[in-house]
Image (cartoon, rainbow, N blue to C red; front, side, top):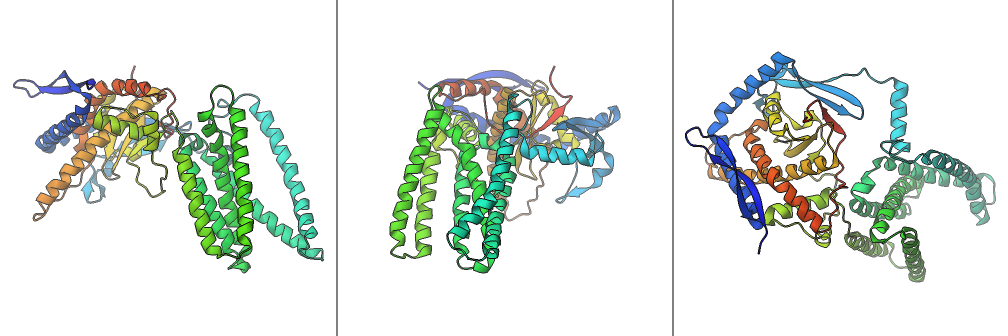
Length: 513
């Protein structure tokens, strides 16, 4: 028998047309149909009330201006901004439409940081973990200090060893040439170390999206190898090409090193992570030696360089893809969370650990559009003050605010300054529910456009046009979020430590009491 789920749906009140909440118990697979019905009702409400909806919103904005002129406060990495209504911006047009009621602008509440502090903040973002010193133990500082000293002396020694080795293999008999070759070689390695350091700034992304970064790192490794092989065709460009290749390969090495431990941790039972890691690296080294030996044998027959590289690269990337795909993690990053919520909305069930991991998107190209943003800044999410004033009351009891910006075709979840991990999880769940409404609404809108293809059909949507969808999504989230968490836990997903990688912006002064 299918599980059941309670959803709050509005019942029309007699005469006044007001909505009174009632609970309807539906089979879990009927959740999709309930959402579709809510979309149709919300669109009908929006069509019936659209001409008049903006008048009270504009009046609300004027009331807000009359009170203090401040919409909200926002904090990002310890610095605060005040978003204030800007009546002078009311006539500014964007993409063929005029802002509703007024515009807004961000005003920094602190004076700019001194240049020295700006530089130190920039350096800290590269050399210490996020949240330092609270995110690490007290012994971290002496450990890293001595580690830095070790690498300093090791790097200095590398100059002499590289020069000696090149001289020993007979690069040249003169003293000048091996010195120059050694310097070029060291510059190549130095460029790689700079690339490794710069990429290390990605920080916690290695924890959030380790599968995606791991596979991307393997793609970069093959790209670097391809550039190295290309130096044979352009020997006069050896140094710049070798530097670029080394930067790319060192970035790949950082990715591989940073994601190795979490993957091994997923397979270790008890306190045997060191043993699992050691044996895993041993298997990798054995396979590497066997591959090296086979390559030496094949190279004696002088095969085509391009053909050999293409064949080996395809095998490497195919193996990498299946390696990453086989990893089963019980935490919810954005990709696995999207799979879980979409399955829950469409079927009423949360996928198992194996199914959720197998459906996770492994490769995310940089140009791919991300339809949901969590922890975004206020100015990215809202187009005009009226929409914020209208939406804010819906989230008085929550530690987040969810909206949709049609100009960017993205759902935004703004977090309040006291949002806890569960609030972030709920905000992400709400954002995906709203996205389901928006996608259904777009499908209906495209159908209407096709029906009106012979007539002029112009529509420039703004935040305010989607208020009915946001209101309906609040009702569904109120009754279904707890069910989603319960079903996810039953499947083995860890809900207390989500890895959704929210932005660092937080709304201040709008936290529920």
